[in-house]
Image (cartoon, rainbow, N blue to C red; front, side, top):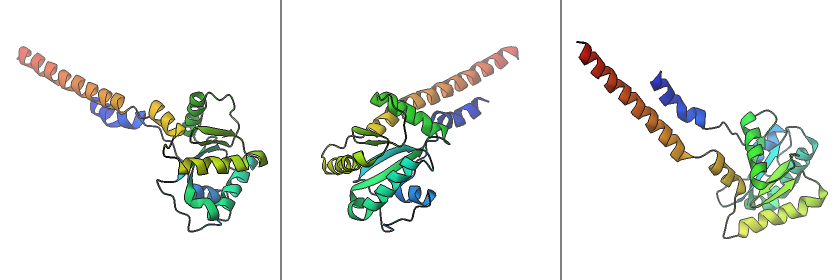
Length: 185
C-alpha cells in the first residue's frame, strides 16, 4: 500500500491542465487556418486565453488572431484553456483571477504579460495587438500565468519532501517490523 502511495503521489499532486495552441484551437472550432506555416517558438509573446468552446466572443478572438497570424504570427503564440469541460483548467482560471485580483470571470479572459483583458470586442483589438508586440520586444518577459503555475502548482520542494517523507516512513516501518520479528523468535 505504501509503495502504491509513493508511486502515485506525484501524479495526484500534478494537475491535468491542458492547453491548445493557435492551430489546434482554430481547428477545434472548425475555423479555416489562414497561416498553415505558422510555428510557435519560445521567443514569442504568449497570449493566454481562458475560454469556452463555441462561445461567440471566443470565436471572434480566434478569428481575429487567425487574421493577424500571417502578418504578426512570428510575434505571438496562443495557449488556450477550455474551462467549462476541464476542471483543472477551471481551477487554473480561478487561481489566475485570484492572483490578478480580478473580479470578472467572463470569457474569453486573456492574459498577456502583466496585462489582462476581460472578454473580447472591437474596443480591445488594437490594445491586444500592441500589448503582445510590446511584450515580444521587451527585455523582461513578464508572465503572470507562469507565476500562477509556479505558485499554485509547481512546488517541487513540497513534492520531493512528501516523497522522501513517505520513503523514510516506509523504511522505518520495515526496520521496526524486522526488530519486532527478531524479538518474537
